[in-house]
Image (cartoon, rainbow, N blue to C red):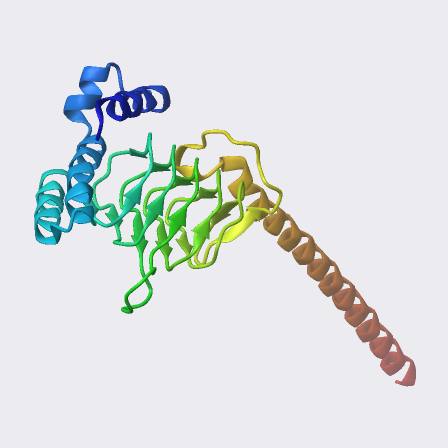
Length: 232
């Protein structure tokens, strides 16, 4: 990782992570940054044809940081891997600039065939903790993937997806902004609240219908009793 890229990545950490109090702290104490530094070396070796050496560097980085990045993966500038433990990035994954990923994210494949089999992430994408992005799909620029989502279909630019399987919470592209863990709380909760309100309305209607049926039954029983008494 050239020095100028390292410097701008450290600056990106400081801008987006309120826990980062100094550039020195980021340089010394952030495993996500360390993993990217080792990946830069592993990727260079991989491209030069030293495949085993690249894998060894990648293996050492995994042991040191808990982050597994295949040396064949392409990673852009100012990428942040926050916390990082358990992150897995496959061989043919492509990650754009200014991407923000959290721990336990997997950019995995869905086939054992050779060739492109891992995701492509556009610029400015945020991937929440525990999310799984699987297959040779494209995640558009500034898209948001909520925590623990499982994404198996392409995501348009600027769209937020949540759930298993992941679905859009708002199909209208949002303006670029930073959403911690890739899940805007109001965007994630609004559909759920609408569902709750819909269910509440249906329950109220059912209760009213049952009340009417009970009243009609009571009235009918009263009329039957009246007829029986009159007959007597």
